[in-house]
Image (cartoon, rainbow, N blue to C red; front, top):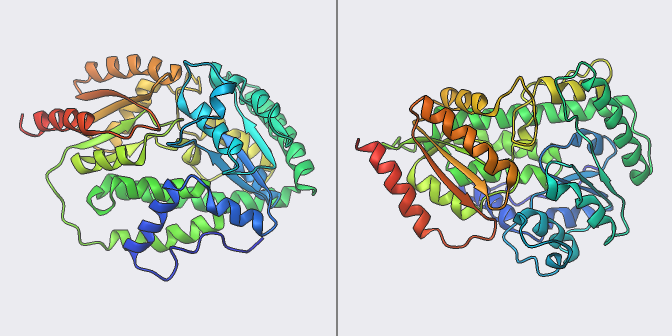
Amino acid sequence: MNNRVFNEWRDVSLDEAMGACLDLTEDHTFPTVARWRDLGGKVVGHFQVYFPEEIVHAAGMLPVKMRGGPVEPTRAEAHFGSYLCSIIKTALEGALSGAIKLDLFVSHPICDAARNLAAIWGRNFDHPCQILYLPQNPNSAHSATYLRGEYDRMRRVVEEVAGRRIEDDDLRRSIAVFNENRRLMRELYDIKRESPWLVRAEEAYALVAVGGMIPREEHNDLLQFVLPQLRARTTKEEDRIRVVFEGGFCEQPPLDMIRMLGRSCYVVDDDLLIGLRWILEDVPTEGDPLLNLARAYIDGSSYSPVQHDLRKPKEKMLLERVAAARADAVIVAAAKMCEPGLEEQVCYTYALDERDIPYFVTEFEENMTSFEHLELQVETFLENLLFA
């Protein structure tokens, strides 16, 4: 399907294009997904953190990252207990309210709350609801073979929903599209690290976020249009602290919180929407495409608190991220009620203390609307560093 669903950024200035991306990111009625459906396309929603979207793309369907949002989960509340993170509820709320309609939903047992998500969705919708079991022990010699089989199972599920076969050549073409997409997002993060004054924190976030709501070919076009213009901006560098934000691997902080942080410092790296950037290198297009995707997940990927890989201790990976970004400090955040995120904060802070790297610990929730107190705390923390 070649029809476009996101044209608001085309034939306008860079600032207008960025405004269109920010508007789409904050629009939790998923207008681009609705346009895709109006054109006759099918939609697969996948929960955090990582999903091999190439499989869905190869079937001609639209993969959509179900990232929740700042909405009141009035319908979803009845299906969950009280002491759970927000995204579990708001992702379901979007579907129950009719804001987004899916043909398949895929979840992952990344935590106790998410473990039952597919079953809860399955009781409330007619479309299939599946669980993708990523390897619990990626250090096993058989993990790639296991994951290749799991991806093949998911291919058969997607084929049934799409009503067509997914050939290996279809997967190879999709891998090539996503390789280009990941390369462009790496270039965006290169700009964040090298010249953070050229792209505001909320702009960089929106440029990644819209990728989870539009076809990847369109996302590639957008990034190819925006990135050279970002580099050509004449914005002057300011005397600001360079900060890494850690804690946005699953539930996302409100865009206004990211704006607030961007007013106070340069956010030179982060793990926001890391699932869309999970694969760090090009996936080979020769050979078995599913095995290549499986190996990329295990051997060529980033890190998060929900993947337990002994080769990638989270605190070590955070320190490497800080060093690569030449950051002065770290904001160690976690979504409220997020057990994996809150547990990792302990390891992070111990590692940062050992290296004498300043850090600020905080929590967030999707539907936060007031940031005055948090902004004052962050500014005090940063000013103490700036004028020390």
